[in-house]
Amino acid sequence: MAFCGQVASHANGQGPEPWLNDNADPSRVFLGGESAGANIAHFVAVQAGATKLVGLKIRGMLIVHPYFGTREPSDNELDKYVCPMSTEFDNDPIVNPTADPKLKEMACERVIVLVAEEDEFRNRGEAYYETLAKSGWRGKVEFFETKGEGHCFHVFTDNHNTEVLKNKMVDFINEDI
Image 1 (spheres, rainbow, N blue to C red):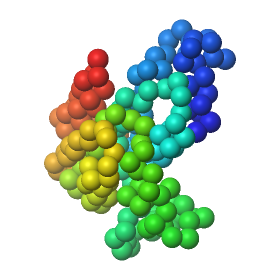
Image 2: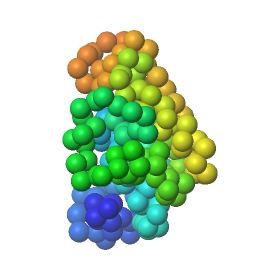
Image 3: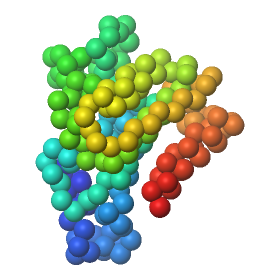
Image 4: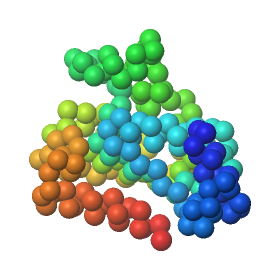
């Protein structure tokens, strides 16, 4: 949250970073994260809402091929290493946003959850989408699935599906203009 506070300090154009004062629009912030980074983006948005962060308006968030914890049993070795200090992985909102009691306080207006059909973590993204839609959060959430692709495919592959996914992300951001 320190980073968001630093960025928010530029809301009046008088922050410590001249480039941000001259070029950033704190009324039009988007958060995004891929894989475990999606978890970080979610956590920042929830904390910004729960702490009533002033000076930033988080317009949207892109959750790309999220790697979240789950209430479902998992044989995935990654689950044991994602947050070693967590004693209850499934119920810890730091790694499992579907267990976050502050979810409805999330600060952004819109969220897009992007998953890939053949991603072993696809169901976690869908569960996040469904939980967010039912949470009482007052924003708009949408879901987009890329057929025939796996986790973070667009980083490793340049094909038609990569182009479609990138365009979907750009359109989501530009929808706000």
